[in-house]
Image 1 (cartoon, rainbow, N blue to C red):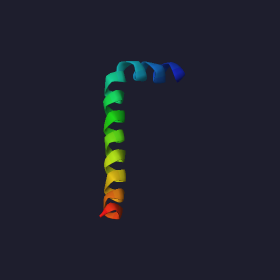
Image 2: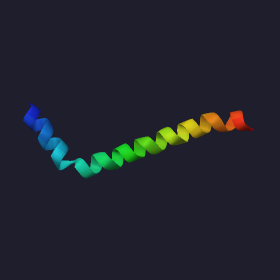
Image 3: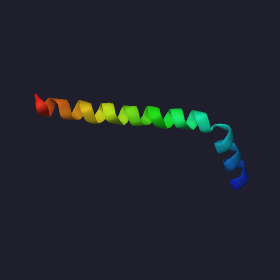
Image 4: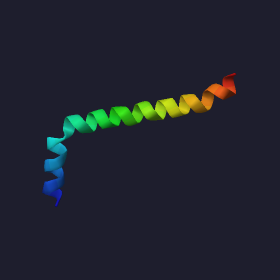
Length: 40
């Protein structure tokens, strides 16, 4: 089982990096959307 997980992570490493970047961008947009009304 651990070997299977390692294999999957190794094969899809580039995709995981892009997914993490997308999740970080969504988090930044959420925080910005929540903070902008407080600044206006």
